[in-house]
Length: 86
Image (cartoon, rainbow, N blue to C red; front, side):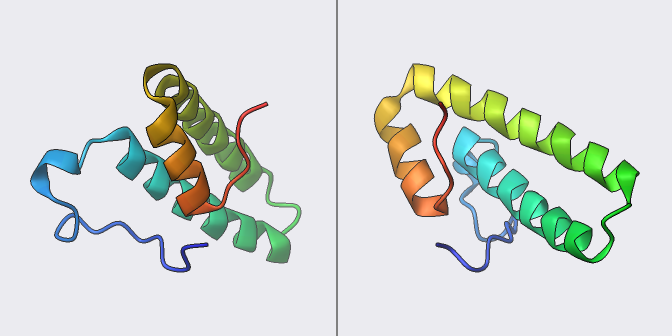
């Protein structure tokens, strides 16, 4: 699993900044941060709602990638160590 998922615009080549992979990586890092926050603050319902919105957006991007290119999808799932779609 990639420990540091922070996505900096200077580290990503210019042609890949809007790619599905970079978007999913960025959303995954935000999900991890919000999950850690919710472990400490379990009754923060507005953050829970934000987390579910981010999870839904990442799921839609993964569905798109699965339909377009299964090899890139599989590689991304393995790289980020997240569960695949059901």
